[in-house]
Image: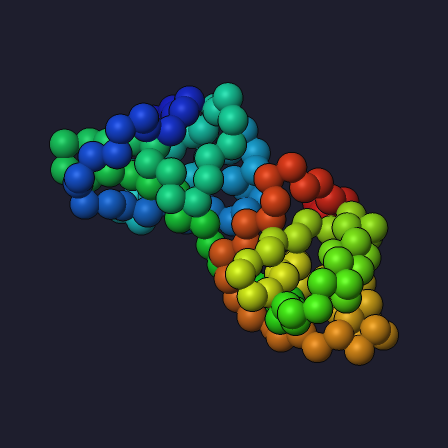
Length: 142
């Protein structure tokens, strides 16, 4: 098993081999993973790795993190700022992580958020995406 301490500084133009991991694993500094080709890696990091980060290179390939999609709830943004600001505040007040894209807000698929959206009559869709909430966001997720 190869131990990784940091991402690679220079990204080489080699074929990529993915090591798939979920968002909560990627938030950790110490963990183990197996790449698609069966190579095993141990991670003892100074800072967590992000989706797409290259972390190891052999003569034949570059190994990179591939964050796995997860179930999220997505709310389409409307052009009125007040309801959008209120929605962001409400989600933040529940201490859930949030991702804001150009045209939507994404949150984890959680019963409390589903109930909030239904109670407030906020239309949402269930979907799967790579979820990248604000980096400094913290929540009560396990």
